[in-house]
Length: 310
Image (cartoon, rainbow, N blue to C red):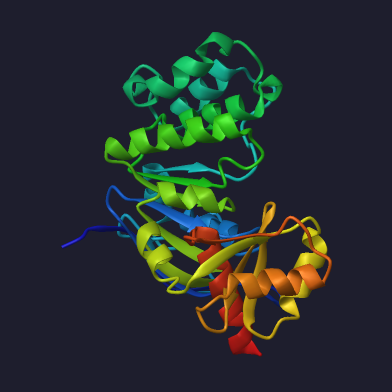
């Protein structure tokens, strides 16, 4: 039987007249790397701030390490590491001073838990005397992660840790998370980057305060259940309009230089579509059947929700 480290039941959070979280349910198992995936404004930060006892839920029950977020907030705070969306360390303290400060808050020392942060800290140790405010974005994230880990927490909660950092730093950060998971730490991470979903054990796709799907990345993709094509031409913006005007096409979404399309039926006469687009003055037309990814699944789920509301 799985041991749940985080349990969220019918969680709701409202700010005056705005309902940010709308009856969310999910659980996270011990040692799992769980991703909350969705765009800005989806409700991710509100959920994380409730899990870390920084704000109260409007309704619902939330437990972390079997402690209630309202009744047992002190116990939760002592046993979790939290990295908020915005860099929140002391910018006028050095790297080493920040780390020492957070270690003392939790009654420990850098030396006592150095083995836990060593792989990360060695990358910023050459800059240990530099003020935190003078670090690059990637270095700031590594320092924040060290500070969140220095008291050896059972649970690590990271709110969009790779937002605003370069691609190399994003890759390095996720490699660090996977190594931490291998040490038995339960990790809950949020991100707006759909490609990062594939690095999680399970993901929850969230939009407008509601979870649309929860499963492993592989099973989320398998649930797409439709054929998908990538289409491009020399006039990409006009191509969007022209494809949407065709009755047999169900959905059209931009993905870089291509458009991903689904059909009312899963049968596509590529020659006929090329002919129709050529008649509309498109050139350099390319059409190929492709496999869906997490972002395709997210867009389909979001589109289905809009149709249901309508």
